[in-house]
Length: 236
Image (tube, rainbow, N blue to C red; front, side):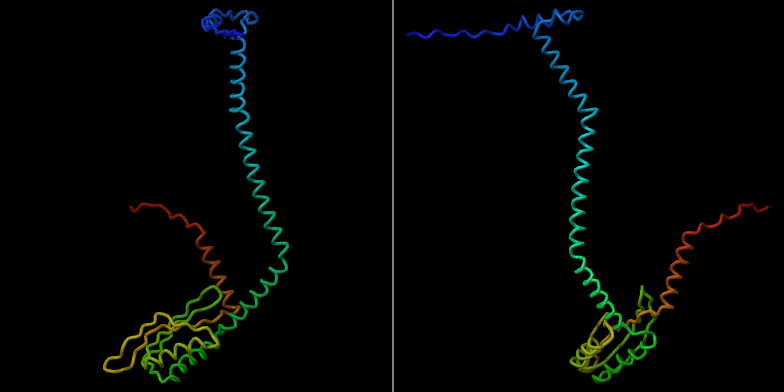
């Protein structure tokens, strides 16, 4: 049995072009099917593009911002939730920090104890058989809640004695530091010379803290005050 070939209908492009060419704009109802469908699809695409440009793009940007804010609020919620769950632990840590700070503060001498601390530093060197060529306290520098007193020292002694002196300084009950350390051989001798700045610290009493705050507030007030305008005048 022989198969009968099926003939495919071909589009008549010339006829379609003629349909578009001879359209009557005053009678759209009489237009052929292809021009009607093409114009409706074009109008639909134009409406979609206009809606996207004038309405939906702004709404999508607003939606994106709202989603980002939602994620940020969720992160804040989770953070605050963890803080609330660990509130007791944070309270204990804060109390421990206060105790540690109080213990460190006690290692700073007050104004009446600073002289005794300098004597201890001097005796630490003498106790190791060191010779002080220079022991000169400098100008006290006021910080936030403490004062820093630098002492320039120049000490002669043996290598092991100087090392033991540095260890004794570190073991003092008060905070004392060695800064700018320089050790050089002493001329015509087996001993060494230690040049350093010994820094001791003390905490400020309430009166000093109040005075410092008043000075800072006065300085800010003077800095923000406007300068009076100078009088203008000519010299005859």
